[in-house]
Length: 269
Length: 341
Image (cartoon, rainbow over all chains, first blue to last red; front, side, top):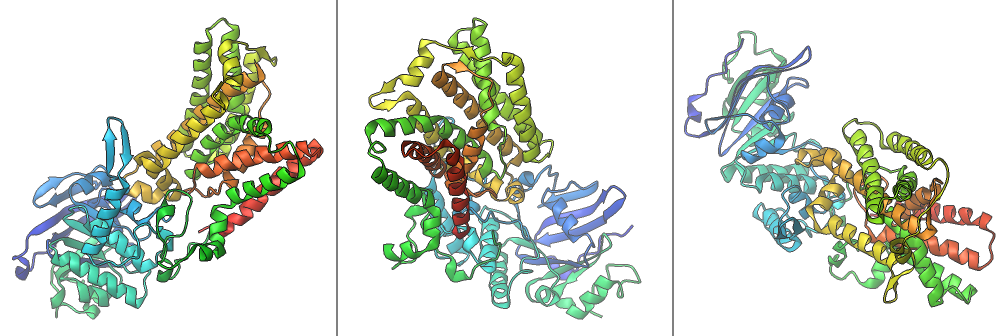
């Protein structure tokens, strides 16, 4: 089996927030992950690239508690964790921005930001929503990330794709989270909106969060990430500092053209 | 229902009936402009329709607007209101409860059976309510845990409940005459009849729970997008079970009210109640896809349907035309919801 790729020395200054060690996951006879290992550091954007079916989504679903890996460990700040549900991982400070199932369209922005974390007031079992507090805090959550939306009372249905993604990211970032995972955060967006979302990602990074991004867009990976992991056929075949590689190299790693001699050969030939 | 994202400048709140109405839209958007917005009319269609109906019948009939007749309309709509509130909760989670009418019948017959077997009236009412609640709970568990389509499950329950009512009563009505039920049917607090009080209390609690408690938000989220709700950690299955159980329990309350009104427990399936409850929910602007709606809208819808039938009767229109009128109003209002935003 593949060993986890060695860490490039220039990364050592950053704290490893997420350490995924040798996880495997099979669905019946289909092996989706084989001893996959990745790391993500605070204050960095870590990208995962790979072809369709390479196991990227399965990997992050194991991290955020949607799936439970068959074997291997997930360490958060050095501590071994096991997540039975997305709730568990959220409690450990991992937030996920899902590709298309992020927001309830018929609820307002503030209701979405506070979904399942509603602020209530009242006594005993009689607890009522504290709408004033939630609206104010929702405005603050958006303002902190410089997300401009006319009113948090608008229904999500009335927002553009970019605004929706901004709201999802603000929600993920707004709960004292340490790790934010994004699955194709700009897949459905136009050029300008993509730019805004990339600015948001940069803001989360500079706030000291560990940001993990799945992307098919190599230019984007080169633009926004500091580290990149390549997945192929359920394995993490290689990982490298983004500055040491090129978009062309990434394509070669993904298709396997660069990969004949094994792995861990950190890019940039 | 289009899923397309409107342009960013559309991201302003519009007047909506459920408490978000206070949100100021774009500054400078006056009331006149609001009136020209088709979505305003779609959201308030049921109130507008009720006003039109009251004006028309009030002009055509001398009796329609008398205190006695208004009282009669409200009392007659009380049972429908209670059932409609239950149907609203289910439809808001993007389900439908087709068993609602026969569960009313079952609850009534269980009450009558217990009463005929010398249970006290309190115990008889209690077991009637319990029967409704259990029918709803079974619906909910099979739909949420068994992952069977709501349509099929509640259609099956419709048959089971009306069959059980026939078996239990041996097909015969049971007289249930006690002071408690007589008082419920005819008594009043001041000018408000108990039947109306029950309906108002039920609707009031349902409104508060839907819009001022976590439970309601989670219910709306479940109906709006079960996947998103699940991803955010909402227990979607529990929400659905709760909605059907509430619907069943309210059908039980309606069963008690029906028994009081008729003075007997009759094993006749209340099919009209099912149709009217769905109609009132549609009239009330609740999305049949789930995720959005109000309690006030369907309640006004239930009053409207009752007033429509009452007015037509007063005008001497043959009973045979009434279902046509009711059906047309419902289809028209469903058409209006296309402009809802």
